[in-house]
Amino acid sequence: MAAGKHFLQFNDFSRSQFDHLFERTRWIKEQFKAYRKYWPLQDRTLVMIFEKASTRTRLSFEAGMQQLGGSAIYLNTRDSQLGRGEPVEDAAQVISRMSDVVMIRTFEQDIVERFASCSRVPVINGLTNEYHPCQILADIYTYIEHRGPISGRTVAWIGDSNNVCNTWLQAAEVFGFNVHVSTPPGYEVEPERAGLYGTDNFEEFADPMAAVRGADLVTTDVWTSMGFEAENEERLRDFADWQVDAEMMAGAKADALFMHCLPAHRGEEVAAAVIDGTQSVVWDEAENRLHVQKALLEYLVLGEVKS
Ligand code: CP
Ligand code: NVA
Image (cartoon, rainbow, N blue to C red; front, side):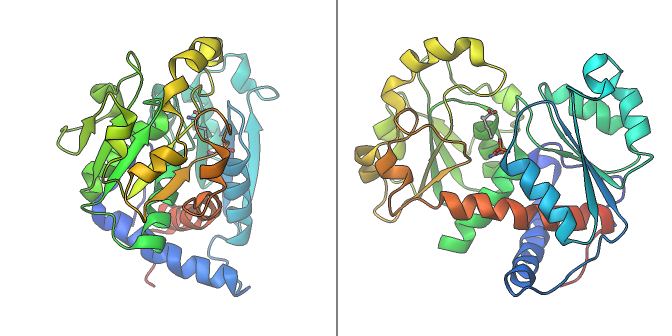
């Protein structure tokens, strides 16, 4: 049973827990595609708390919970007491007495950690300034669907060393693959903030063209993440040479995939020819948020369901 278990950062789970989740994802996705009803979470409630905007995360959790037979309630900071200074610990006490699982998208990681420490039910990180574990769960599942095991492969991360990058780095330690990171000067990975135990699985490159050499997967994200909008103008200048374009994709392995968590800005971090090109799997990646998170909800609420 997974009682009391949270998913706050990627390395909260072990390799064998991910193997279980991926096996369940495959089965749950199959049921969905065949229009077969699977309602293990009937009468269960997910509360989703959003302190930042979202399309994919809200939609995939809300639709996912409904498809599992449960219901989802959306709260945001604008029209709840959360934006008016109620302590996060008090909110956790109350919300977790009325629900079976909680998902939070917020600013500092410390907020989800504090919430979880006072919650009676499992808590899922739906993105913080530091991490985006549900995204990388979907990304790795998508990689495996297209190319098989990711262990031993090379992922090139081009651009900002943000929440999504940090989570790739944690995943590299769990799954045993390599990440080549190339950021502009001043935006390098901060290993402690990334929550890394060792540094064996990642290498930094000043030149993005050197980072993509030998890569099986090239991935990037916006230059300005939510919460950092004040730095936008400066970032547009600093990141100008870190756009993933056709030349950069040509520097990776011939069968390399391209991923982006979305939303994307064509002409900034990625060229239209790449994100809309044949190597891009961004729509599968987005869809898989739904399927992996349904497996995650099942696991956190019911424990290890046998396939
Ligand atoms: N990738 C992702 O988390 O998208 P949203 O911000 O739309 O949820
Ligand atoms: N790094 C981006 C991801 C959005 C899904 C952000 O935090 O805004």
